[in-house]
Amino acid sequence: MTKFEALGLDQPLLDAISDLGFESPSEVQEKSIPILLEQETDLVALAQTGTGKTAAFGFPMIQKIQSDSRTTQGLILSPTRELCLQITNELKLYSKYVKGLNVVAIYGGASITDQARQIKRGAQIVVATPGRMKDMIGRNMVDISKIDYCVLDEADEMLNMGFYEDIKDILSNTPQEKFTWLFSATMPKEVATIAKKFMHKPVEITVGSKNAGASTVQHEYYVVGGRDRYAALKRLADANPGIFSVVFCRTKRDTQRVAEKLIEDGYNAGALHGDLSQNQRDLVMNSFRKKQVQMLVATDVAARGIDVDDVTHVINYQLPDEIETYTHRSGRTGRAGKSGISMVIVTRSELRKIKAIEKKIQQEFLSKKIPDGIEICEIQLYHLANKIKETKVNQEIDSYLPAINDVLEGIDREELIKKIFSVEFTQFYNYYSKTKDLNSQDSGKGVGSDKGDIPTEGSVRYFINVGERDGYDWMSLKDFLRDTLNLEKEDVYNVDTKDSFSFFNTDAQLTEFILQTFTDFKLEGRFINVEVSKNPGAGGGGKGGKKRRGRKGGGGSRRGGNKSYKGGKKGGYGKKGGKKKQGFY
Image (cartoon, rainbow, N blue to C red):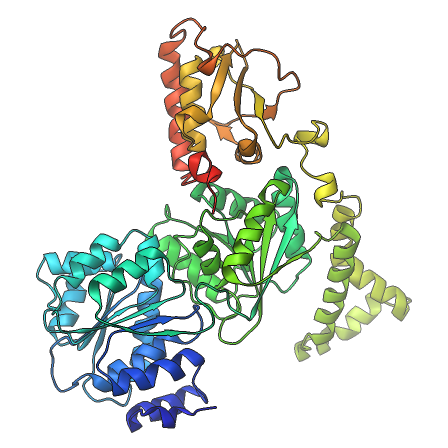
């Protein structure tokens, strides 16, 4: 294995590396550092998160920067505040023996004037999020017109987050003759476009295969009914007592709902999504880093830039729309050479998506069963025994032993062990001993498991417990369903409103999604229930049910329809359903 000394690094950097305890470079460092030190070139490096990319571009940039000049010479763009701060802190550690070198972080959620003041004092390297950097350029608070090196870190994530125009504007303020180093986990067409537009004959290096998942991650999937997702999530957590995980949901609303239910059920959980303030986000992330939160429930956008090395599991509560997003999710575990597990909870109708992901990441998924209650009880019992065995004895207890012995007098060793374990174990056993099998043979049912198998083809008719009495006519109910589910107009049809309930149709491939969406769905404190109709031939009334009398209850439809719409939007239903869903992968 090549040592850092052989890569051409100067002594101040080698001293810092020694202090940090690094012994051997990672593959991306071994491939990138000599090229960036020896050549003045653009570079495209494809490598998973957690492989040491910051050092791969950080060491060469620090070595090439003129620290005796106060001019800003290096710019590093990263997708999130967390990653921006992390890169900044790492570069400061790497450059601790380089006299006069200043690294400044520029990001939203902090005082822009304080950041401008730091730059004015002299910052040879600026690490920035695109939004704040563009803002500061617009206010003439930062000058990047003389930079020599520009790094686009986690380029695919920045583009996924919609920063293409910002990046383009920022790069237009940099000199044509600079060198650009692009680091990315995947190479979607948008990243290729950036490389083509802003780089000149870049050297390309790849660690692993393009878009492939990290080899340190094991991929597993569990097939359950749509209504059993949450129960399956709890069992997967309970079957892994030492779990330290990120749980991914597709929407802000699902993220908040799942986190709240986990907390109610006694798990150390927290939510991370776009509706949180920066202060709330910081509190959740600090708790997660300290492992006070063991299950961080997050949306894909909010989780960008999370860089915690010890994550044991990534759990896909719902699959994302894009395969590249799955690669980013699974990259949150198995970092820094450690192993990790990426679990996917799917319904039978989603199994084709697993095949598509396997093909893209060039790794096979293991089909696994959700553990049954007795199996989980056994795991938890052994975990408790091991926890007791490994507990460090607090010597302060010695003075209380005589009194304790008096209380426990007459109980033999075996009986005492049983009693100790029963204190924590009985409630757990009572919960799980009579639970059902969640695996696919018992899943795919409607509420209460008496609705029959969910249809997989053709048109499906649904019952919903709102109607004209709630202020809906066919048109406003159709709008409510379309907006809440984020479907195309034509995806909901044959809407037929009655006095206190209604019917509507969709194509069968949307059924799992619709039933899942309306699980525990509340509107103004009332549960809105959707079920597959037991009498699918009833009603109809043509496309949209236009035979209905105009706008009956029109004034009330604002009360029901628009409020429902707000509820749906607040949930942030993103790209779910509709044409996007039908064209998955």
